[in-house]
Length: 503
Image 1 (cartoon, rainbow, N blue to C red):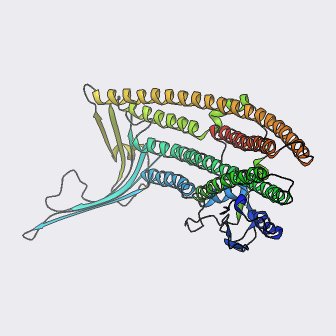
Image 2: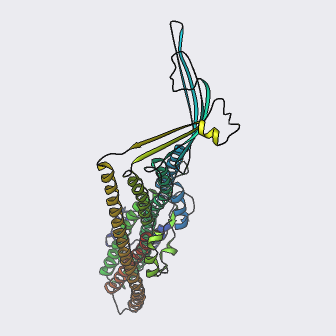
Image 3: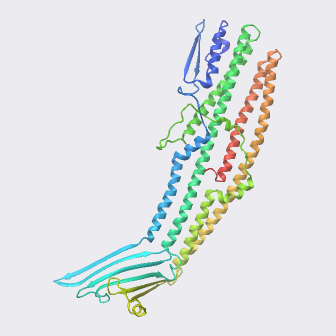
């Protein structure tokens, strides 16, 4: 609100009802629904313009946006929250891929050769292999071979086989497929914790933005209240001045105080509107479209003025390793590295592969299966391979152990940092609580002094200078109180954020 003409320049014959029009307009300031300009013509032709530009509100009624409704919408529709859900989906896709290493595999091999009318060979081989979680591959198949120049190792005609393939040393306890599956399962848990970590950070920022928005609105309401009081006082002083009971200096003093509050109110309005835009950064529709919070929404200042109960610090710090998702992520990283360490240890061992097949001259005709049949119908193979110096295996194993140690140190450092931060935020919250109580007591005392000074002024024993001085002190402590409430809430929610509890 801006008064174009100072009160001291108004003509003495300004009618009281014209002053009342201004006062009424100022009183409507907090609830005005649209911009408007009120112009008052005086007998001398002087024009006084009052610009009311408080909110760009529609004709809708004011609605309160509670912090619970705000956070619920952030949790459901904010892109970061949706991205966090994708982490779990990616982990599920990785797990599905790892399970694919144990899918049964069907293999078909067909080779024929004919030259100058001579059938050199016909060879058909169909095989199905089933990997298992214990490191044994079970396979079954048949061969059909004939021809003049067929491989003499092959059975003439149809032969079937049923066998296994197993690694005896390197790969006996674990191998790449089994290690990959174990790690994929751990990634699932790790992905869930990474999702919670992202949600924890997002909600903490959203909470802080909401309470900053509430603080700016509370400050604006405070200034608006003082503008109304100062306007009423200016009107009364102007009336008593025209009646000859007050000096011109009193009218200037009253109007200067009003202008001071108007400037503060305008600054608070700008901050409130900017904080509304900041809040809108977290508002998205179900179709993932951002939108600006409509002007008829205001924050829930009743929650802003409450003192939330503080949790036990020792209990919170003791549970950090279990509650904070980032610390849990370190645990899963260590588990993944431990799987990798066991796999790398296998590379230090010789690679010994045993293949055993039970054969049949026809399509899986194993009638009369006895010791004599087993002695005369089998195929065995044994493969051995080992690097002489094993430098790659030793290097990989050593590197994995270093990674384990490095991750463990990072986990310990992160835990100590979080415990330290939590202690700092807790100390701040406790101090802010005490400061709020002191500020509330000071506010009551300043209000009592202000009322006492107003009573003396009404009896002609004081002046506007002393009233303005008392009023400014009262406003200062109200400003400080709003600032302390905001810092208190920031500390309280920072405690939950440090504990990973914003979920």
